Length: 256
Image 1 (tube, rainbow, N blue to C red):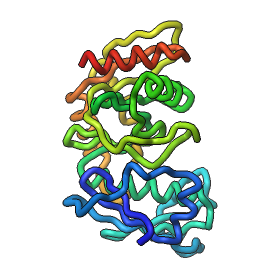
Image 2 (image 1 turned 90 degrees about the vertical axis):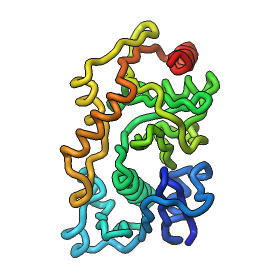
Image 3 (image 1 turned 30 degrees about the horizontal axis):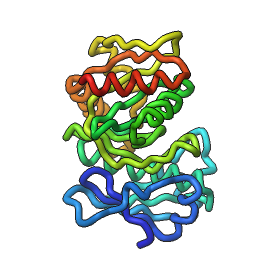
């Protein structure tokens, strides 16, 4: 087995054939398995794509059918994909999603940075400034969990991932304690304001990866989002594209 990753209390074993493709897109040195884990164990298998498997499998990306499909079979996630690094990355993301869901968590399209073990999770739509704020926070002394995908686990831990949207933003931190959850907005100056719980849950669900059929129901995903909002709340975080935004983020986390 060429690659073994930790995801919270779970482990993902990746077939050798996928590793060279994933090396072109992902960084996982901070997620290497240190020993046996008590959570779900998954194996991510790569298979050639075919019309038969595509018809019965779940498309990896409905907008990119050429990436192929996957099937979730008990402790295996089988990806029927071409020899393409983007398709392999999507397959690994699907395996991480299944692992996080089986641990009772949520997987978010989000960035996260840790300050002394306390995590700031940054959510927002594409182009809102997640990576920009994450970069500023790292410059202010934070450790990056990911600028692209992170998991929220029921233990209150934030799970880092191998994924990055910007090549220079390399994840270095595996886990941290959820301390602040923010919805990032561009503005002329740094400020924070609380978001009411119903709106906070709606915004969090907007950025949650949808569970594959047969894994977790949508009502259960909603209940998990409610639990995370109840844990730390959600703040609207307005900021500039400025190094001062990272300092403001660091101080906001430190004040929690």
